[in-house]
Image (tube, rainbow, N blue to C red; front, side, top):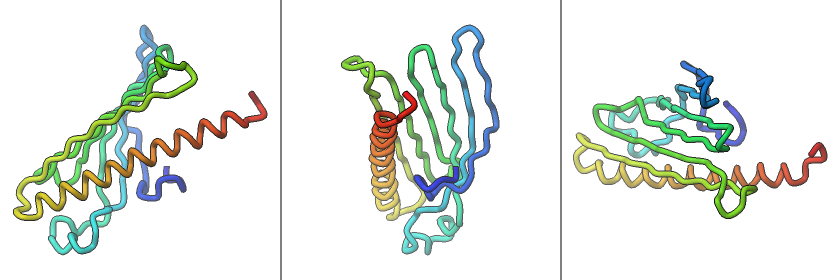
Length: 151
């Protein structure tokens, strides 16, 4: 990051990285700085009128099991909102050449009065679009690997 695939991510800083010698699992904690994607009409509310937001992401890569789990949550607006996302990438039981992708998200917004529902709906839609983007990227990468002359 940043990269053309996700223009909302401005920077990512790794704050912790370690490998469990016994299991081979690689753990990373990163802080992402992202563009504030809240629509301008909602940014009339002073707490939403900021240029960037911060997300914390933790990931566990297990090369032996060919799986990766990711948990992320928003560090911005914590007194008003709780936004958490969990994703798992793992080898499909149907076909070991396929990747199974499971994603769950939780959104709770309080203290914004009548805007609670509007902001939750926007955040839910944005997270769904993010999941669709991940699916598209996985398909693109798998197509690129299929046609790779170096295999």
